[in-house]
Amino acid sequence: MLFSGTIFNKAYFKTETLGKTDTKYKADKSGCRIINIPYDEYITDKEIPQGALVCELSEINSAEENTRLIQSQIDTASETGGIVAVPKGRYKITTVELKSNVTLFIPKGAELVSVSCEENEHTEKKLGSGVIVAENADNIAITGGGIINGNGESYTFEPDKDEPLYALKYFNLYTRVIESRRRLRKGKPSHRPNVIHFRNCSNVKVFNLILKDAACWTFHLENCKNTEIFDFIIDNHMHVANTDGIDIAGGENIKIRHCFIATADDGIVLKAVKNPIKNVDISDCIISSFANCFKIGTETQKDVSAVKITDCYFFMPDGITGGYAGVAIETADGSNVSDIFVSNIEMDGVSSPLLIWAGNRMKYGKNKIGSIKNVKVKNITANNVELPSAINGCKDENGNNCIASIYLENIKTKYRDTKEALSVLKNVPEHSLTDYPEITRVAHIYFRSHEMSRYWDLPCYGLFIRNADEVEIKDFDCTPRTVNKRIKIHRA
Image 1 (tube, rainbow, N blue to C red):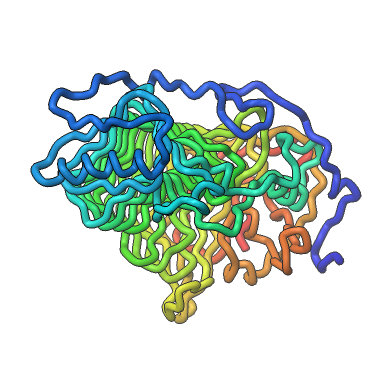
Image 2: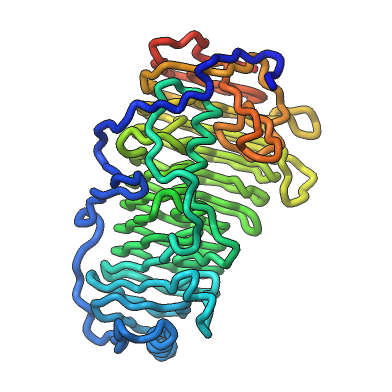
């Protein structure tokens, strides 16, 4: 069924692609993993420090036995403070709890591997919220140059399709969304742990470390303070659903720098459900995501303020298509998001450079709609984009726009030059503002499943603006597809 205001093209359901193209970072044949991550630029080989308590692990031990040995040394070290180290080798474990004043040292050549989904069902000590966890701990660290492996693929079903989805020769949003989703490995109906989950911790350092193959959120920081993450790699299977890279779920004074993150879901994401988020500084990160490379949201009940992200590179490999935005700044559940600074971001193959969304989903029952204010985005270069950017707001209970004081400067974007088979909705209704906030859903009606839903293409190619005050734009340059017939900027 077609709706009023829609332009329909017979090529709408064509799935013919352009095929593989050359990019700086490359995927394997399945399109599921980056094969040339520059590990040596992030990870260094360090000797186990003198005085460290070294765990006597064995590769033939059960996961329970290795876990017991590590946990015993951590418990001992926590009495006076110290370093607990694992020897080189590959060791199965279940959940290990890090405690105050302890550094877990995993040297290069060592790998702690989570039990698989099937093993976890039969093990006596089942996985908790993460493979490595900490709660109410102070002065904790993980380092050494080694790997923590979440064994995530075992917790998912096979996808509907397993070949890479390259950019469509005839782009339209519906086909792109549905074909991308068919590559996802959805979770089995079982517990899926994080790789690391720290809750209510302070003075945290994680550096010179690789996290690999998460089953769910990779590194979950819940209401942690004074945290530093640097010289750090996340190397995930890029089609395992719900594998966010770094999740900041409340907290303050968090610095993330010099990280390489390749994952299926959001790369670095701020989620303010139970606790506010304040003072987050992200810089010098390379991120590949089949969702959003950097996002505030979607879970947004508490306030978010003073966030800075600078000098980063966001990409999709080999001309593969999928994902949403390079930068997404959202409030959907009542949170007030303010004082956000984004600068010096280069993107390649990311679907849409920017989404700023204030909606009224109100998932957690708050009565007052949130807001987004004082956002500055400057010096953005994005090539091979497929969708416009959007500033998509709603009105609060007093009829005022919930987005205000947005400044965009020196934004340069260029489309991948394909054909178009668009279904354009000229007058975009506001019903989508109660929906899940993503760039693909600015003009969208959800009905039972994504396959049965409507995904319209927007009436502009550059920037869609709705319900926003004081939007200042300086040097906004967007090169559309050669066949383009849409206007550059649309204000609804």
